[in-house]
Amino acid sequence: MLTLERARSWYPGNDAVHGFDHVERVYRMAERLAELEGADMEIVRAAALLHDVEGSEPGGENRPNHHHQSADFAATVLREEGWANERIKAVQHCIRAHRFRGDGEAPQTLEAQVLFDADKLDVLGAIGTARTIAYAVMAGTPVFTEPSEQFFQTGKEIPGEEHSAYHEYLYKLRRVKDRLHTASACSIAEQRHAAMVAYFEQLAAEMRGER
Image (cartoon, rainbow, N blue to C red; front, top):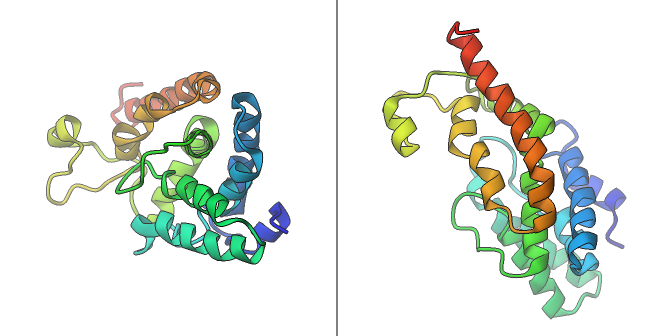
């Protein structure tokens, strides 16, 4: 049976970014959004438990493809559980569509939108800020470096420019709330977004000696 306890064994215990604690938060939030939005709870729960199961470690060479690898893993697990092929494909779509970057599919179904939103809410607020800094530390990159003018304009670093946690905030995190799909997630995101912005703007000001 596909449960939180079974899923625990699939995730590392020492990954502060994509470990089981992240999966459990996404699972709980996805349940909340699914109930509010009227999504298929079984599809949403399965997708949440399996969405980062393969190749999601920070800086890992398989990270850009982890959504495809996790979808493949999900199909194997769900076939063993006796799921119908159509519902397996629905879970796989949710997983392939949860990425913010890269070649992930756009979330077409309500269930995929719920998973996307639940996953993205976990990069906002206090926990999102902590995860972003943890990712930088685990990847061996700085928490803050001053972005180049080119990065401010285009989101692309100049040669030799390090992608710090602050860069990630500018490039991705401050845009997340505008990419959410469900009304429920958008409402939750407002306070989380404000808390995250306050932290990173304070960080930049302190690093520049302005406050």
